[in-house]
Length: 634
Image (cartoon, rainbow, N blue to C red; front, side, top):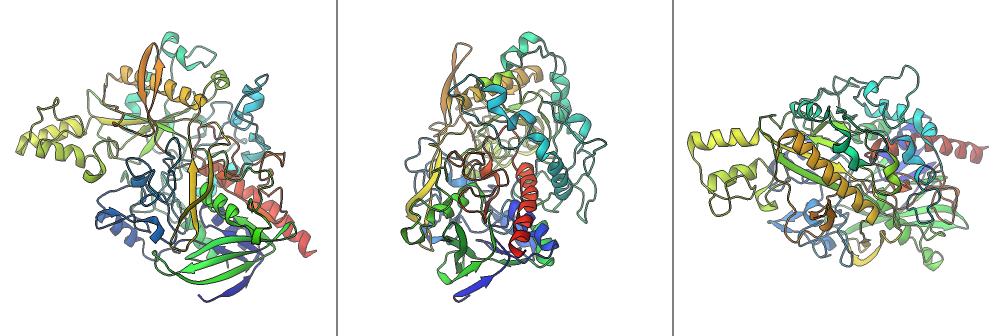
């Protein structure tokens, strides 16, 4: 594309969940929409992604999708990538602090921000598909738990659960959520009269059933550490709402149980944003791919255009440039790329702190759900690697009076054995690691005998040992609420990409409030493992940059966290323009025709995966955009 200028009613940057839904809803009403997408457009041949995934040695969440992370077995320098993104290979280990290997510049960060994202059409195709709602108190943390505490870290949202509830229902229909309403009435969650999820719940796995039986009958002494404020004598394992077909839905097939939801569903039974993006383009939305927005232009207090750069090959160079002009502008580029774009927009020095940033809050309060991961070996088989990655969870302990002192968490039960938890990147994920251990006499998994006594097995001995071990493996994840901290932030790095644009610089840590939540998750793990009579293999890797120590019940315990892929909080919503970036409609306080959407607007994160909530918020924001367009046209 040569230098060009394009005019439309609504300009959108980013074609993931929020961008695609807003574009589709507007285009159905005859609104002229253009989307700028930094990565490639919707691929006509899904099998190309599958081929890339099958051939990848390191089957990390990003492995099926461009741009490539490795070349000849080595990490590609992000300065040679036009539209880069973080990878699981570069958010830990030895590479996370090296900007010549990792796209995110974390060279001065106290701890690693370990979550990743994509930059291509429908850029969260590698999500797991989990869609729980936030619970009512997640929207009112200051009111519910912070009264009288001057330094309480969690604010209220400018909207409440009742405001978003009807949009949750719309979002669940659009995504195609499978769940059972009767199981979701915990933590004061409500549903409209007669409401049913679009599809029945996914059936529980054998592991789900084993855990359900193990925690059904407990004593108050066993559960008092949770701080629920009332005796807990049993916990319920319930179906996990998920945007995954339990039966054919909207011309998509039912889940076949490939246990491959991350990074890619081979039969597309899991919803991904390309579905809505295709609908939007069929309804008239124009998608411009390989187009990286690099500056938001202002005229007085209104946005007057967006400059963008085009490229052909994923390694660059620039092939052209353009300007997109519209009545309304929507930035939907996720919780790291959106603040990056806002901060890059200097307008010839007229906005030295970037656009929409009079509060100096753009890029601040970066949050995730730091995950405590645990894995073990059961006394009897549960036959993992069948079904979706997650079918059930324990959600009822995600809210309670303890939240005045420590972070909440949920319990997510995994069906994929020890996949990605053991070994190292050079050997790939389990069960490959366990197999190599037994074939070669190694012990990366910890299963092949005590140190120095590992055996190499053959024939029936190998087959029988593999069957015995792999069928008893399980993992549990504890996604933990993170408190907002203005020092956790996205700024601009001096390191650049192949288009000579500054890459994101990250400063990240976890607070004492959040660490206490991880410590209680550790105690919850111990309780579940004891009830299961399981052998605990959970371990922190030596030199883990995310590691920290906590004293629990008088003993020092080594803990760590992983990334959940939930990038949140960096342009938060609020009523006060001095302490927030957007209002309750996700409209900029500074610029009346600019909307910043996605999970970056979350003031707090609760324990729920953010996708359903950000989709519901996007559907709500469409109403305000339509009203804004009507006012302008009248």
